[in-house]
Length: 327
Image (cartoon, rainbow, N blue to C red; front, side):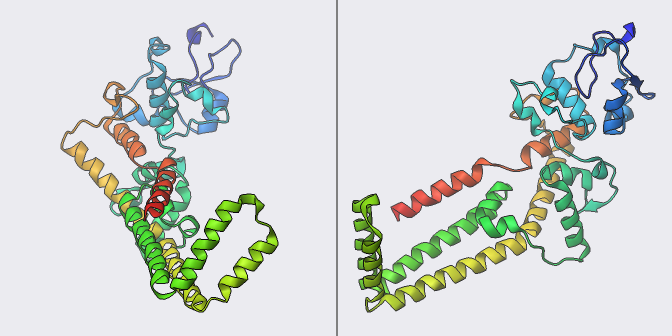
């Protein structure tokens, strides 16, 4: 046991102790807890075997936390994550989670999507990988001409922002804003009495605040319905929502197809950068100092550029709301 004293298991990050059941990789000599080895199904450094990697005991404690986390996860596509995930990442560097979660089912998948390996596609998708791999394959094979995406249906262009499909997202949200502004202009032009009554009603509601009782509200609403051009305004409003619903259906039907193309373009762009010898840098760390293989470096970069963006939809929503208030 003294041979592995003060050496940590590369999966759970716990130091080996006397009596631990240890499994040593026959290819590179990396020690693991047997339970950890069985959990991931292979050596944590199996991705480095083809490079001739050999584990050296002096490595223990030599790498900083960021490098160890990157090597451990990039080498097996993120499969080393376990229930106690926080121990695998330094608390001061939470963004190291940017490394893709490529499941073993796709790491060895020999199929391609748009000419790119499934493992690369999985790295770029990162979130909800099985669903998108399945849908992408069906679209490419012609089994499905269209697919239905509930996220795109309920959230529209905001879902496109979430999936980093920015160009299409901006186009779609611009159409919705233009549609909203156009419907308001149509009401002002073709139902001016209703528009004025609505404006008066909103001012009354703002002045009254929570003091506006139900009877006053019902009375004001009834008066608005009795305005001569109320039916015109209602027709315009219904047309607006009908067109909006059609746009949502369009977004839901084409979201997966557009996302598939976006992922493919991302992978091709990264491959082009690698082929041209460009230095790929990451905002989280200087990966050129991590001693990663080209394949691992590509996966790291795909993960940083792919995946999802939780803040983009919120920013887009707030920006659209501010713009509508100005207009």
